[in-house]
Image 1 (spheres, one colour):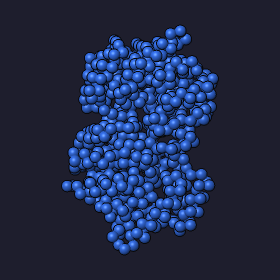
Image 2: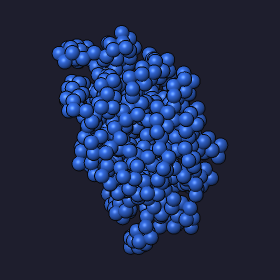
Image 3: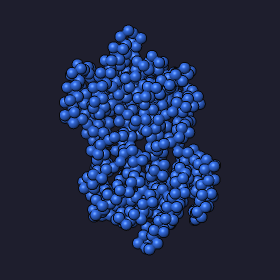
Image 4: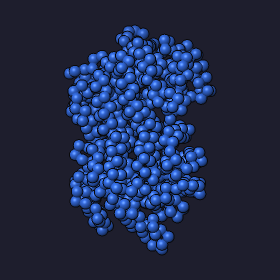
Length: 305
Length: 305
């Protein structure tokens, strides 16, 4: 079975910088991606933390072009290409393949609610059939707290069975370990790669036979998260996990995306990074001050930005 | 205050026909729109019932062009142009303005959940500022059962106050009459036009000072709904409302969009109309049979398709 072998066990859903008129800022994103890659994480650009759905298809296509033109190795890239329509999901996925990306992360259509597994199966099937390219490596993106569309284990099994060389795995942001574990047990033996949606579950995921994690905080703590994934069989693994949990818990006291952007802005001495697109909001000055104090309390900083 | 005067009190969120490869079918849609207009309803194309979010921006732009080229009067058109990104919402709204459409129906960004009124205000403001065209007539689209993003009364007031000539009204599919009524009471005096999201509330809405309704079932019962809106001050208005309610209740026993498409396919002798895009599913044969029997029981048919 052909596996996208170069994707690392930890990927960052890369936060996206925006300029003063709300356009994505290619040059800052390129710099950030090169830094993250140097820290040892892959690049799940256009994810939830990237504010991908606050960007149009055209904005994403331009950014992808710019990233590839900057010399970024697409072996490390897993762009989010999921949209509510088969047409847009297919077009973005085809662009990712053309760019050489190792995989694509695909949301279920998230407008209609209470849709059936049959309807979701048809959606993913039609995307795969329309892309019609053996280089397509889909990772299904389960994030019911946001989409309100949970992907059932039986849906995953059905998709992996029908498309064994296209459906490579998933990112599971359900936050429900018993679900994550059931997917690993059922599907990892067939090569289905399960990435937890948070490093909170990294050690558990690796011990259970999962692939790793794609986690928000891999934007601000990439080196340490990547290190645990490399050394999870060492005796200090639980201590490493506890240290990661402490950083995450500190950020989780604030709205995550603006908090990560505020941290990158602060430690990188670049206030432009604070900007988010509506409907998200930047941290208030008070929140920013509280975040930085809390980070100081745990001796956390970001180096080398 | 300039009002988009030609929009009728009842609009149909026009169902969209798709061909066998899932592409929107312009010629069938054109025919349907001309029929609906003849029945006396306006055309809220690209709504929830149109499966608009199952189409890409490019597919919608092509359809809009084709509709206008067919000679449809844009005075009757209120396309849905809301997307999760400011960029796409602005581009679709600009295209609608360029086509001469009387108004646009704009969803809140619906990917992130639990967003603030401040974030939603910024989203709509930035769309209006970016479109930067005095011909922009926005109708805000409140449909929390689907989007999970309720539009608060105070958000509506704030938007109408800041953009009195751009924010013209809303479609309220909350299904919560006390909310609808509170919006009419607060905002109708300033010219804010409240369309109920279902004809179930048509008579109540008109009596309270609202504008009318934009309702799914205006796809299959347009003439009778339009008639009540024209004659709501007549003595038989409550009887008319009861008759409308009976038709709606029959359709509401089934998944609404596929049921309406099955009815149009049946009464128009055109099975192509049954097709829906994933994640929605067509009615099963049993459901279809039950629907047609139920429609026969209430002596309902669609004439002139």
